[in-house]
Picture 1 (cartoon, rainbow, N blue to C red):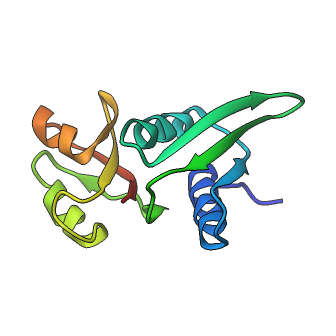
Picture 2: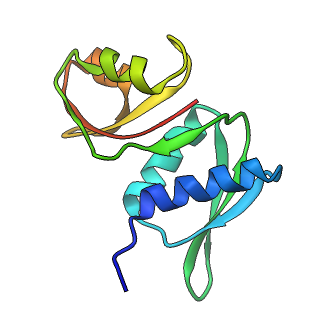
Length: 127
């Protein structure tokens, strides 16, 4: 059995449920990185979630004001000040949506990355 890429898998599951017209889904497997991504999405009002610990760990996700969310593959490295090019590529409009970036200061949005003047690796985007 091949290795599962947790982040794209989880974000695809959310989008599939949204396309079906529902607003809740169960996501598993779970990782610390996925929880950090969900924290940022929750902070910006795109989703709400609850970690359920029974026999296996899983996350119950409630979709709020989310149009689209996707993982970015391959994971491009962005230098400090270079996020604008990728924001134009992945987001539909200026100041609409967020880019989620992994930096040496942890997971941040593209806007926070610009403010802190640091570089990082693109993980996902949502709007």
